[in-house]
Image: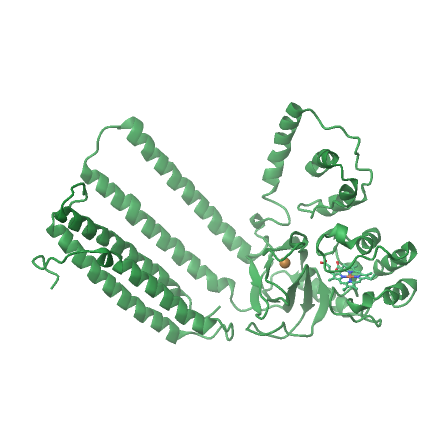
Length: 386
Length: 126
Ligand SMILES: [Cu+2]
């Protein structure tokens, strides 16, 4: 992603906010994303001395930069054009059909305009005019819209047909996603998601080739669950459990986002979906159900001493808070802070030390006042919880 | 009773009658569907009763709009069926209103069908 590197120093330089640029870790939008996210973060070397190119050169550079960027918007882990899920594939097919249909209508319309102004600019009889309006303006749109409507209506129940895979509860909470594998429950108007299941956060494994049922809810405000590469959006509404069926057809890692504005850190409320074989899925859930790998040491002591356990659970220890994400297998996840940073010991320390800088609006207090040794110890411990 | 000899005077109410029926049909159709499906439970259970209810109000709405269409169409034809209304006379006014009613009734007729189509294809609350 050349843009991240070549444009940012200039902007950062103009704003002259070194602190910002050090922590500026754009939510990785593309393939090499995680690497870029990490490099942007650790790049304290972000060359503030780098000079901005001249205006003309920049314009040219910008165009050449933006073209592949615009095109690359059509592929990658957050694209609806991948057909990585059966629903996304159906919607994509419909999209192309409608796109070409629109192109056809446009060409015909412009063709008629050219005919009427260039080829045959004279007066046409009223009869011709009325017949033209009747066919082109009444019959054609009515028939076309009816056809599209019927096609779409036939598609809808199929997308929501019965699941044959696991049931997974996902709760949208400001500003992260709570995940529980293997719950038992149904959609409905109920206060909260079904309890139980194997807890995790900000990462959802799904078996390829199976229709998993996601039960979606929220304890605070309305969020929306969206994995563009796999399926359409579904709202997560307090006091209601909604149902979304997802069938990944290709293994891979896909980006998910919250698609309903929910507060300050809404734009940093993301997650990953990892589509794997059914066997790998079962193995993953089994691994996640285990207690933490390391249940003693200075990291845990500092964690308990500073009250992290009031909000976080680490199974196998006394930490059993339920406000924030379950950290039992934190290091097994790909990202930290709901899709924000790459998972690393260094980033865990950064997140704990300057939570509000990394993720403005976050609901976890910053612990920058703690002695560095304690933060390092906590980060080392959490970083070992595979 | 809607013959050419029985010309009625058109006004704003006869003009908007058809779209009003469309709006009421829309409201009722969504109402009965919401009463059935808002609880978000037993989503695979068929909702035959609701679908028949929607079918019923659809037939009524289409019949009423059809009558409005026919009346306006006949009276409009009776006035010569012109589409150009640039005179300041009572007949031109009448003809203009009738023709507009015809168009709105046609639009409303198609729209009511579109509103009802989901009930034809979707058999449960999914
Ligand atoms: Cu949100």
